[in-house]
Image 1 (cartoon, each protein chain N blue to C red):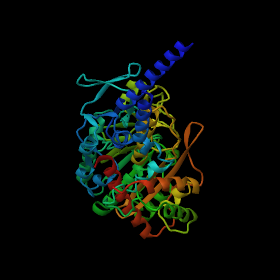
Image 2: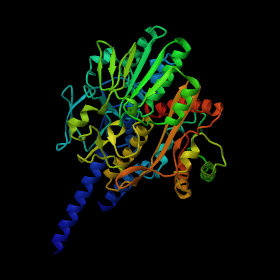
Image 3: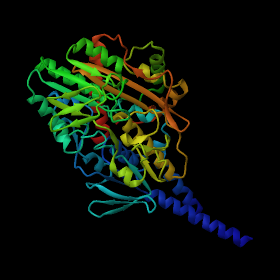
Image 4: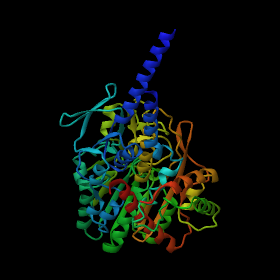
Length: 96
Length: 417
C-alpha cells in the first residue's frame, strides 16, 4: 500500500514537473519567442537551444556588445546565474 | 501504544490517499477568456494534465485590444483581432459559453447564467476591466454610443472608426485620457498617434486634441518627440497641469468640459475611468480602488482564499495592465496552482513586460520591464527595462514596428491557436 502511494505521489510529481521546475523569468519569454518553430516571427524560438549559447547571448545583450532593440533592456534584469537556469530549462524543452 | 501507532498510520495513509485523489481530480474554474484567462486554462492543463479545468466565458470568440488602434484608422480588419476557443478545447479545457453570475467563496462554487453550478478547488478570475460608468459625469452606457470609448475591442472600435471616416476634412477629434491606473497605459497615446497619421494622410486640415487627466504617461519622451516630427500643428496634448482633465461630458452636444474650456468635438473618444470586471466585486476580491490586490507569487487574492486574480483586474505593484503582462501572470499563476495542489510552495517568479506602440505604421517604440518581489509587491528591477532609445535611426523604428506585429502573432498563437 505504502509503495503504491509512493508511486502515485511520484507519478503526480512527474506530471507537474514541467511547469513547476520553470525557473524565475522563463515563463515570460514565450510572449515574444514562439514555442512553435513554425511561427511566423523574426524572433528565434528558445526550446532545444544550446544553453551555453543562450547564456552567452544574454551576457552580450547585457554588456551592449550585441546590438538589440529590446533584449538589452530585458537582459539587464537577470544575473548570469538566473540566465543559466532559464537557458538550461529551455535547452531541455523539445521543439514543437 | 502499538494500537495508537497503527491508527495514526492508517489515518495518515488515508489522508495521503485523499490528497492524492484531490490532486488528480482537482477542479479549477477560470472565469474570463482573454489573454489572461485563456492562457491560464491552457497552462493549467499543461502543468498537470489530470486537472479538471473549465473556462467560463460568455462570448463565443475573443476580440483582442492590442492592434485595435490600427483597426480604427483602416490599417487592419477587426476580423484579424478575433480568436475562437477551439485550441483551448483541444487542450482538454471544458469551455462554458456562459456568464458567471455568482461566486460563493466559502462554499467554493461558481454559478453561471443558465443556473449551472461549478464547484472548484481553485478559482482563477480574469475578468479584465469594466468601464466605471458615471465616474466621469455624463459618461454612461448610452453616452458611449455617441462618444465611443473603444477601450474594449469590438463594436466600439467599429463605431469610432465609422465616426472618423464620416468626419469632414477640417474637423476636430478630441480624445479624453483617464488618470492611472487603467488598461494599456500607452494605449491612448498610440491611438492619438495613429489617428493623427490618419488625419494627416486623409483629412489634413483636421485637428486632434488629447485632454489628459495626467501630467506624465508611458513612453512620453518618445511619443512627444515623434509627434513634433510627424504631426506638428495637428496633434495637441493638454496635460492635467494645463487644464487637461475632463470634468464632464455632454453626449447630446458632443462636448467635453475642463476647468478652462468646453471642447465641441466632431468626433469624441472618451477613454473613461475603469475598474476590475464586475465578477471581481461579486466574488469579494476587489477593494475600494475597484481593483484586486493579489499575492505577487501565486496571484492569490489578498481578500479571499483559493481565488486567484490575473490580468488587468489585478494589482500587485509595478506590472502594468497589458496583454503581455496578463499572459505572463497567467503562466506563473497556472504553475503556482499546480504546485500548491501537490502541497508544495511555489517559487518567486521574475516576470517581464514588453509593450510596443506604433506612432505611425512603420514607426514602432517599446517599453520593457523586469520585476521582482519586494515587500509583497512586484517591483521594477533597477537598471533593467525602460523605453526605446530617444535617438534611434528610422531603421530601428521600422524594426520595432515589425517586432510589434510579430509579438501579436506570437502571443495570440500561444493563447488561442
